[in-house]
Image (tube, rainbow, N blue to C red; front, side):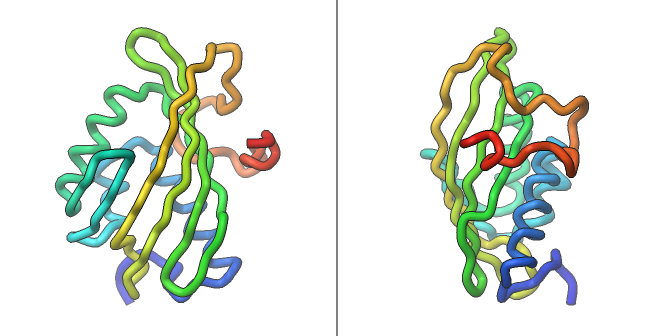
Length: 156
């Protein structure tokens, strides 16, 4: 089967794998690569923005990461069943003006049989923080180191 393993229906192990794969991909900040985890006709609601299809996903993510600098994301499995996964997450970033934020949120995901995400609903809240309040500060862009704390470890 083509697509993106692991494939649904998910169990506890494959759901955790899928969540970590999503986190790792988003931490690359590469819109084209990230978009390949979604179906061609994927539908999103991200905050109050509605996005349809890979081309709009790429455009959305490119704009996002031009604004959200030094983006660092941690996701954690909340629940799963069949073709669906719910996650909670937090990420930190700063703007070109140097203003830091931590965003907290929840996502509901639905996958096609080939493991590509067909539906994504994200609810997100931004909280201003100072640079000294940052928690997500691994050295480089890309995946969070395997020994780095989780959201639960931070108490988020």
